[in-house]
Structure formats: C-alpha cells, structure tokens
Image (cartoon, rainbow, N blue to C red; front, side):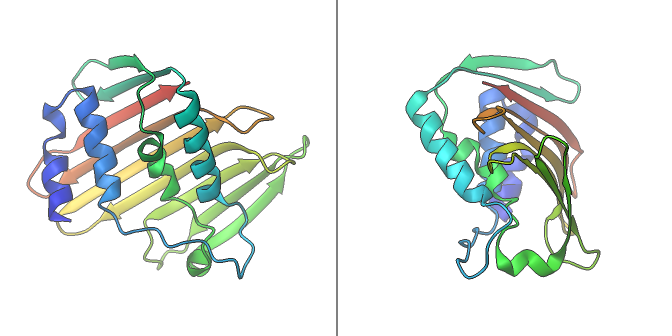
Length: 201
C-alpha cells in the first residue's frame, strides 16, 4: 500500500487528468476482487453489469462531460470521448457484494416500489472487516440497474479514506448515464483532501 500512499499525497499538485489517474490507481492498489461463485444466486451481478457496460462504451465511445472539484480550487471541466471504460468503472466494481464470502458481513433490506422496481439496501455489521459501509441498488422489474449508491471507508494508522459513489442509468435500457465520486482522504502526516468528480454521458 506504500505505493498507493505516495501517489495519493501528490493529488493536490495534479490537473484534472492527473487527479483522475491517481484516484483510479488507488483503487487498483486495493486487494483483488474474487470471482462470483455459481453455487449461490447473487442478488444482482454488479460485476457482470459493469463489464458489459465497459465493453459497450468502449465500442461506442460517447462524449463525456467530466468535472473535478478539489478544496480551495476552481472546478475543472473537460469533454472527451477518449476514456478507458474498464478503468473508469472499476471503482464501482469494488462495491459488488454479491460474493458469498461477504454475505455474513451485511444485513439486507429490500423494498418493492409501486412501479415494480426493487430497492435493496446492504448495511455492514458493526464488527465486520469490510470497506463497503453501505450499498443501495435500485433495479427495474426487468433486472436493469437504475441507480447505485455506496459508501466506502478505509482506514489504518497511516491512511484514511471515505468516499460516496453514485451511478445512474437510463430507465429501460440500464445503460450508464452518469456517475459521481465524492470523498475525503488523509495521510497521517498530511492535510485532508476533499474532492468531487462528476461525469455525464
């Protein structure tokens, strides 16, 4: 993790592209995600959905309007179609709780909306050693993702990071239409860095 910390410490000195690269690199430094087991039916295969979306977006190359806001600095905005979608969506893949190994860590609550969509809330048990504090998934009656919201907390004696991530999808198709990452991170000998990233397709 020392490599991750060194990269994170430089966040304030980089422009929008550098900042995004470092944030997504920090995600890549985290432990690998084990595959979903076929032995138990998952509530929603988030990893499969994100992989399908990454392939579609890589082929279609839509324009993306992206903005980054860090504390005490003006918002920086770019519009581009040159996006590595597998890397871009990896930050959402890390909150996939469909793996059986994680089932005992979370309490699951489900509610059906009048339109037939289902909201599933996963709340982490107090004594569970898992970074995802909460995950909320809204899925249509046709098993199309409509909305994702998660809170991820990681901390140790050297590093603190808390972020809220949100992903929205088009009604009916389930295709990604936008996402947001906002949070704070701090090294033990550094200042806290607050940031927000918005992307709209």
